[in-house]
Length: 312
Image 1 (cartoon, rainbow, N blue to C red):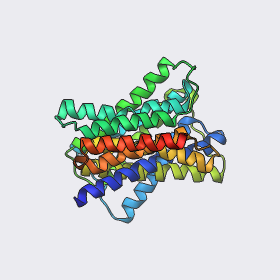
Image 2 (cartoon, rainbow, N blue to C red):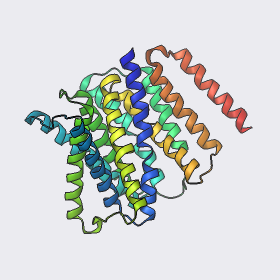
Image 3 (tube, rainbow, N blue to C red):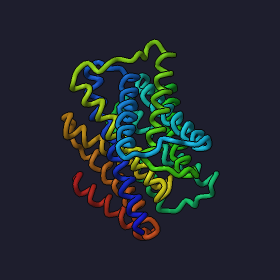
Image 4 (tube, one colour):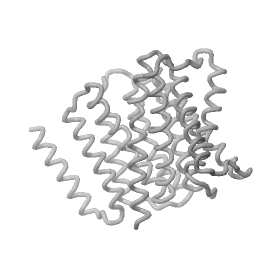
């Protein structure tokens, strides 16, 4: 039970940390730093900080061939997920991309059920439905604008590669510290992104233009990258891939909270309902088998009644 609690806490922290991406990325975009550079400095700062931490703790950097194959796969998958996600912003609004991206918990559940015979429980299905609906309510866009086929393809590719990343972390037999695993994953991601930037003339690397930009580059490396991936790795090992993926619903919720607190966005009733549904989805995962059908029905009914009274 203590391990489960540890996994749940780490899953929540991973999602919240990852959700702080806008807090670091938006100021860099405002200063004219391009997408490729933002991603490169996110990864490179994280690798530098993790390397220093491992040196201070006198941890070995040695890996064997089997471990390197798994780490290489994870690094390439994480880099591919990041590149396709950021590239989708050129074809659609970031809000739509963030909404579509959250299909990855469904992909994780399907992969685990189809290839690893993981039982899909009623609470898991209910949590996924609540989370998807809640994420949809967080998006505030113009429904009359047609979706870009290329944009949807890129986001779906990002979701799939991230889902496979989570499954591999869950199923991998390698045993090493979360810090060491994250160091090598991000090192390979950084090298992959650097190679990718050289193949695309429009994605040249830029130096951060000010001390403020360097601060936010360090923020991206520490909070939504190092902390998020370390906590996610622990959560996957303790509670499993599917619950960890569903708790990722807190990522866009955190982004919305940052938008309200730091960027002057308004908290509407629609956003509030979305937040309630996402928190309910996470609650379903936390309670797990103790959440029976009668409890689920009662909870959803209570949410609808309270929301209706507020709206009225």
